[in-house]
Amino acid sequence: MPAEHVRVAGSLTDRRPSLTGTEIVDHLVPPRQFRGASIDNYQPDPDYPSQAEAVDAIREFVAAWQPARGGLFSRRKAPKTLPGIYLDGGFGVGKTHLLASLWHLAPGRKYFGTFIEYTALVGSLGYAQTVKMLRGSSFLAIDEFELDDPGDTRMMSRLLGELTASGTRIAATSNTPPNALGEGRFAAQDFLREIDALAGQFTTIRIDGLDYRRRDVEGHAVSVADDAALEQAIADLDGNATVDDFATVISYLGGVHPSRYAKLVDGLQAIGLRNVTVLDHQTDALRFVAFVDRLYDAQVRVVASGVPLDAVFAEDMLGGGYRKKYLRAISRLISLTSGAPE
Ligand SMILES: Nc1ncnc2c1ncn2[C@@H]1O[C@H](COP(=O)(O)OP(=O)(O)OP(=O)(O)O)[C@@H](O)[C@H]1O
Ligand SMILES: [Mg+2]
Image (cartoon, rainbow, N blue to C red; front, side, top):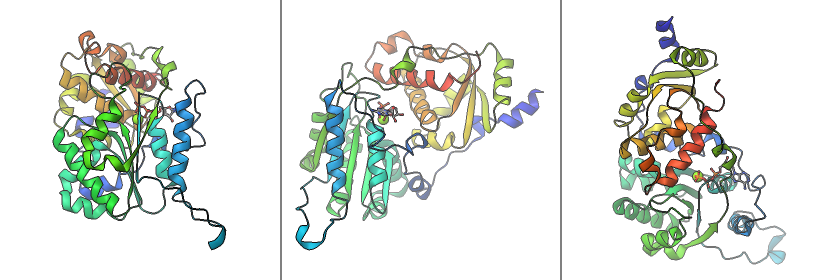
């Protein structure tokens, strides 16, 4: 009975992801997928020595948090490390994994969020209140540092300056920069130039390598045969789920700030997307990419009908400046739909 399905499954558009500043702060922890990430379960690829070097540099950064052992006389001179570390590299090389590992090792009060979440926090609390809230913490992790909005970059740079001055240590990862069709080789230099006065406080670490999820990319996103199969697949799952038309979700996402997408999908086991069609507009496509990132972080299963989700981005977009973002989203969509029945 369709009416019952609607009640059981609900609609994404009925979820009101409003967030207070305190709620944003409560969300400043690593996504579910990285709760168990550690330096020990990161496996450096022997073909890319920069991965093992990154682990060494991270261990050195962490050493500053470990209490000196052996009393006054045997205490070794603590190695001098800078308060900041910047992990730069292509997609799927384990940047977020290593960032979460650092967060787990940090003592006391600590935060983990994406650049967008921190800017949303400042937007919600105001700058002064944000500084007050974050000051005195031992560690702040910023995933996917964005450089495309000069105002935001300046604001974040100032915020980080105030925090490092009060003793907070910082780690950040590079975002996939537009037009970085290769490996984004100059991202670290861009970061250092943009954060200007803070540049001397950061050690940059370059991580080369292949996408750890690369095996997924070879598959295809599963598309269920029709709406009835979709509803059935959703009904067969335990836990909360939503079912919506793809077009409805795309237009709904336009009215929700991307920093709230995490809350939008919070607690969902799966989402159903009916009648997926190719996205022709870049704004819609980039919003959908941000939404997919949050689905992936929370490991929300996707059951979809219509065009398979690995074909959702129009060809000309795949050839454009955001190619890497789209490819990453495709890799994530293949993985999220793979549990669905064919
Ligand atoms: N060397 C590794 N050893 C173990 N697990 C890894 C390694 N590299 C990546 N992973 C795992 O692969 C997945 C993708 O890695 P992660 O998300 O950290 O990469 P990333 O560099 O942040 O990529 P993205 O560009 O997607 O943000 C994660 O589940 C992570 O735990
Ligand atoms: Mg990442």
